[in-house]
Image (tube, rainbow, N blue to C red; front, side, top):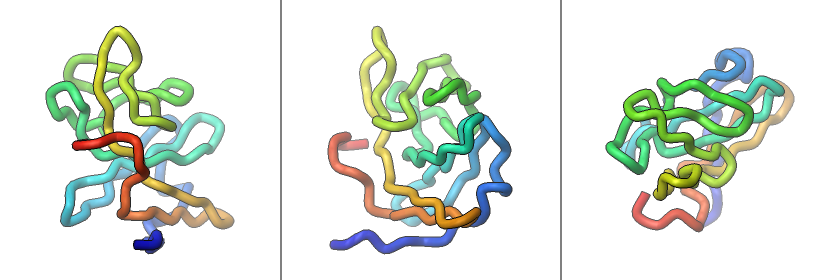
Length: 112
């Protein structure tokens, strides 16, 4: 299945170091904006206890889960050691100021 891109809004809809939730039938996806305007998307569910990553604080290319402060890499979805686990990542692209998201997760994070 090829990526079907879904328009999810403007980069200006997401505050720097913040996130926006895109509700999908398969589960919510958090779309993050870093301080330097890079865009990432993760399943909105921490691999630890399922906390809402979209409510976490973004530092560089990591987000801290608001429940137990696990740090999750925005680019890979991997938990930062010593924690272990993974949140699924999703392809995103920025065209001008418009953000597009694929609902099909990237490979590399099974069961997330």
